[in-house]
Figure 1 (cartoon, rainbow, N blue to C red):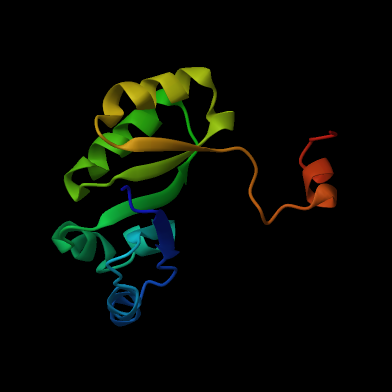
Figure 2: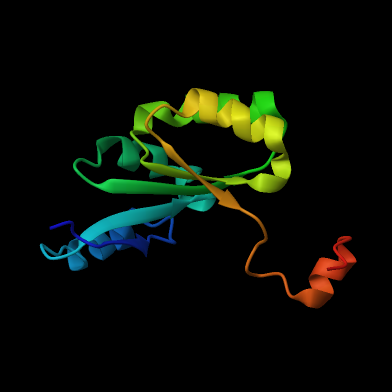
Length: 130
């Protein structure tokens, strides 16, 4: 029987808080992964912490959004962290998505279409009319 998989957000750059989140969510009945954002990866100790995290499913919610070469380089730069999932904006374009897939290896790419913080008014302000 396959275990269900959920992701727990580690939305803090405070290592102590993140350790507590991981400790408090250990569960033998559910496969748990941990989501880390751009803030954590760019924090003083975030990258170092992730590099030492063993036997955990890691979801890097980085929302890459750039030209193909830069997106590819970003993926190559984090490959040593043993990331399992990574987000990329689909509005980066098909060429960027193909380039990322080419270099992602075992990392599963997840497409982001629109940020959940944007409402209809915000969408119109940035040029979306539907």
